[in-house]
Amino acid sequence: MKLEHIFEAELLLELGDAPYPWKWVKDPTDGVGKSGEAEFTVDGNKFEVQLYHRSTDEDPNEDQTTIFWTKDGALKGDAEAGESQIRTMFTIADICKTYVAAIKPKYIKFEANKNPSSRGGRNRLASMYTRMVKRFATKMGYSITIDDGYETGFVLTRRDKKRRMGR
Image (cartoon, rainbow, N blue to C red; front, side, top):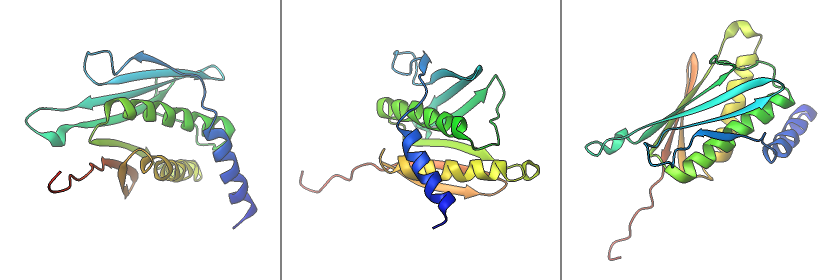
């Protein structure tokens, strides 16, 4: 293992335990739908995380949440994978974990855009998303499907506990 990978792993573990302070703007448990919105600020940049929930009683496959996050109102993030961006990603993960613990959607969907003109920045971001998803999804009881095309798409599916016969 390269020294840079060891340092990166140690940094991820350290920063994963220190998300930025954040607050719900729209609490998903307020009784008005299950969608939520949270926000936090880093170095003067405002981040908003939207968790759009959709479900119907007729179709249980519609029990899904799609996640978007914006920086200063735009669907983007810095391509540099520095300490503040890693901590920002862990803050977004913390918001998502809090949401998932409360709402428990059947499906969670989001994607990482890969831009070939960004000198690998977006590819590193997609790679970081993949590592974070693998770290957190199984702990939250979700299986992972990753579609690694032009955009890396993630679908997390809740693993429902199977009922044992006779119980």
